[in-house]
Image (cartoon, each protein chain N blue to C red):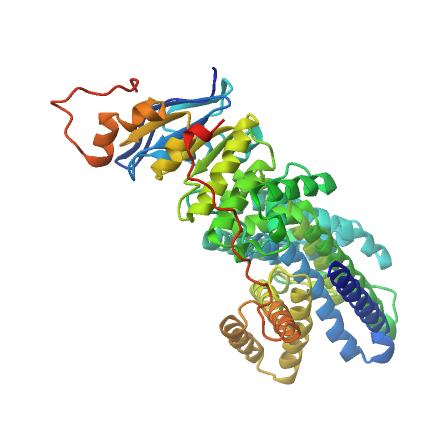
Length: 353
Length: 247
């Protein structure tokens, strides 16, 4: 019995490993097969969102604190790279050396942001993240000497030919996405990740079992913010400019939430799948229909459908279907029978010692 | 004996309601202490104040003569007080073993082994890989007890451990408490099941309207008129008071 179980686990692991190798090969070969810049443009945006939504998920998905203020980190990372390159005269591929600075800026912003926002929970937390987002957007508009105001900041020229420009960025964003997915897996498997998931289930109970909830939440928030800011820097270099309304876009966080909910909040594969479905879809609709609002309306409709019909997300729901098929209709997780205990006498004081 | 856990004159009010009123309780090391009283008498509030879930308006809480008044729950736990809740609070989306590891002070293979040992002790080790949300109510009570034990606290506070579980499980829980107590663990138990309390506890404290009305050995408390008054609302005026100790 134990041997069969161990064999099944080994088979599953081998299958998962093989699937990962196939996915990695397909991802690496993608721009060689689909060389059109239009197609690689879709892929680059999708990978940017794979990285960012995975970073968002490490905090919001694992802890249950739904942040609608991650655009603060994304925009700040973009501006940090742009302003540093402009003021320090960094040109060429050397601008990629500024990405750690962008991550540091994101982390530095996340500390006071988190110390304020993480004191409260649920809807109050969400409202505070939105408020902080608008503060940053307003600062980007109004600190003109620093941020360039409505004009924004332009990226330095990258010495890549137009034909290979997208390919370079494809592999850079693929690297970002891969690194972030590995970070998410490591966090989920760690004691730190376990504490985050305990906070999601019952924060007060977790505290009563010695979990330093504020410290754990803040660490996750800073990690998530730092990665989001670094990816924001990559996005800026690809787009070659950042403006307040694009860097600090209110739809950015809604998209992240939708991607995570569609795929499966708190899972590793779910947000990745959500980003791979929604971002190219959104781009296609925006390009296909000149009325830009159509994609946003459809985004709202999709969110309603997900909440109504697959509230747990695609990955957990499909996983449950597969398990049911395998177990031929029996519940995926077998209900635990009552603990068998031998009937004993009612507690009697005399029997105590 | 020395009091390992002590509250001195603790007051706690919610708006105009005095949940605790100059509440002084002493728990001796190595004993099983009971805390009883009618609904709303302040038992759970006292647990909350001791464990940092509620702040005392006045008064002090001491653990081994060290003041722990109004410190955060995680620090109370680190000092050596573990507690369970009246309505079980487990991490439903985590497995039983993961629940245990949340409470472990360290990670690694040693922590997993210790967690498995505690699950074995309470009798649910066979379910370590199941999601905690799939456990029955009684098994959740056992899981709560197990994950409090995993960090080896000095004092264990149990809030209605026998509430809502069947008789055989009540006995199972009582046996585990006896074994732990025999090994030196100190308990403070809130419970409405009088048979359970009287059969298990060395000393019982009775709360009514947030104040201690009696404290003493179970046999004395059982016949204390103030206790009967607190529970049944009997008139005491014309009778000889009580054989129990002064509160």
